[in-house]
Structure formats: structure tokens, C-alpha cells
Length: 332
Image 1 (tube, rainbow, N blue to C red):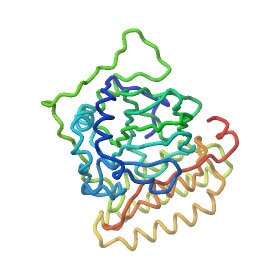
Image 2: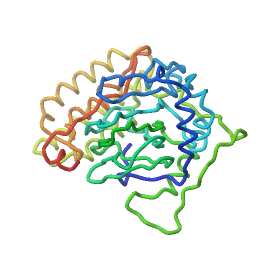
Image 3: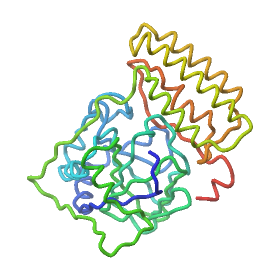
Image 4: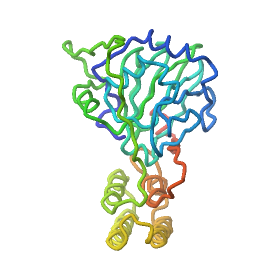
């Protein structure tokens, strides 16, 4: 999710020692390598499709895994933060390892924010987002701008473990965000409320059940395209891209008026996407966005690749855009 600031600390904190003890009790066997095989990265699924700890999909009924249900304080922490939770995991970064620089451009990330609660960490672990850098201390709670280039470095020999929970928001979470502190702000009266373990606390979680459209509505098509075009850097062909996108949106709206998201118009929808993508490839090649991403790649991730979806398709939300120029790499 794109934010107004690179990092925002939320006004709530937790007992990292108790969280670490719950996680340690799960054992080593529950840890899984990163689905894309990034070195030094492993995870324990906490909220997953149908509660299946072997699933990395972000589509479907998101439910607690047995591992999350075995960690009452972890559940209390997520209930306290108050999001509607999608795929959520414990994420471990080995010593002397990194999460390489990238932008999260997948459709999933347009509306999902990533909530971090460090559980096991060291001062040498640094989180970089755009031109800014923070160390998230144990027990704190943070969100960050996934639309900017970001990476994580662990220059310590010991592993780092974070609760990493994905959410489109929720009443509790929006309240915390409204009271949050940008990482560069300093205020003597700002405090994070400490939430100790409480066996009687509410641990009921709000969980996603609907997350990917069968057919994208024309209103969402317009919103997604506008979001991309607003981020585009100046280019000689940008006016032609605007014109093409307007034509595609009007065509999509006419198809929606006939078919809605029913199955009768799937072939027409897919043909409209095919023609738009082909013409966009011709006029949009070489245009980049402010975060270094190619416009064509962003348009595929947010529009043409997800405008029509099969009911049984698995969606992983792991599409990334790596640094495109030396300038973006230097910013890290």
C-alpha cells in the first residue's frame, strides 16, 4: 500500500519475550523456505487459505493455521491491532542475509498494508524504504510504504524474526494509524501503549473471505489505471497511453453493462484485455513510474493480469519489481 510517509510506527507495543517463547515452542519443523527460494528467508504461515500451513495463496478463505492457534499471545496481538487479516506469517531472516531491494507491485499490495511486529531482532537489522532507514525494535508495531523501493539487511550473525501480518485495514487498525508516528517525528508526549499477555483478552480475529474479483468492475479498472498514470514519469508517449487507457475503460464499462461479473461475457472481457495489452505494449514500452517500475509491468500486475480471474486459480502475490537504474539502487 502506498503511504504518505516511508515508515509509520503505531502506538501499541507487545512483550517480545513472551512472543518469542511461543514461537520457539512451535519447533523448527514448522518453518518453510521462502516460496521463491530467496536465500536466508523462511516463514511460518499463521493465516492462510483455509488455514492450510502449506498454502502461500492470498486468494480464498483466510483462516488461522494450527501454528497460530497454538500461540495465544500472538493471536491477542493481532486482535489488538484490529485489522481484517489476509495472509499473515512469521518471517525469519538469517544472520548475514537480506531481503533484496524491490517494490511490491502485485494487485494484492495495492490495498494491503504489511504490519510488522519485531519479535527477535538486533540493532544491526535495518529496514530501508526509499531514502529512509529504521531499526524496528523488539515489540514495536510498524507499517511502511510497499510502493517505494525497499529492502532489509541483517548484518548480525543471529536471525531476525518478525510477525508480518497483511491487512486491508479495519476499525482498530485505522485508529492506530491515525495516532501513529512517522519515523522521523519526535514528540515527548507520544507513547506506544504496552499490551501485556492477558489470558482473558479478546483473541477473535477478523479474517478475509473475499479478496480477488471474478471480473474487475469498471470503477476499479478506472481507479487502478488512474493510480498508475498518476505515478508515471514524463514521456513522449504518455499522452497516447492516456488515450488508450480511456478507450479501454469505456469499452470495459460497456461490457460490464451487458454482463456484469457473470460468466456469459468472459470471452469478450478476455479479448478486450488482450487487445489493450497488445496496444499498450506498442505505445507504453519504456515508460517508467516514480518508484522505478516499468509502466507495462505495473499495468499487468494491477489491471490486465487480474481483470478476469478463474475461480480455481491460485494467487501468490509475490510479483516484485527490482531496481531498474543505478539511481534507485544508490538510494538504498
